[in-house]
Image (cartoon, rainbow, N blue to C red; front, side, top):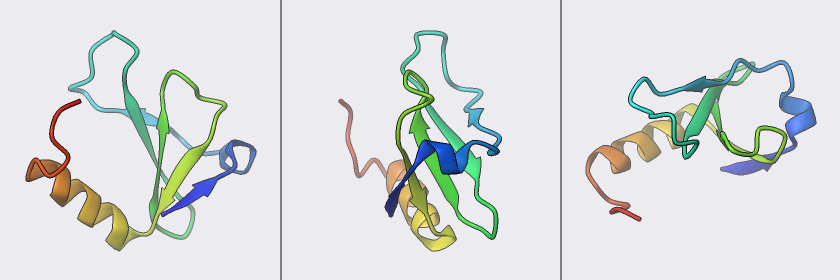
Length: 72
């Protein structure tokens, strides 16, 4: 996973989960050109984003589903 500059990610289409509420505490995801995904904090859309390869993103999603990260 690599941090990515927001200006480089400007043309990306960011999507919030349909499970997200309207409290502003959301993570948004975008497909990257050439594969992979980027994640960002919806409260700071002009801030940094994390870039994942397809394999890294699949591992992240699997770990989240398994409850590996716990609750904050």
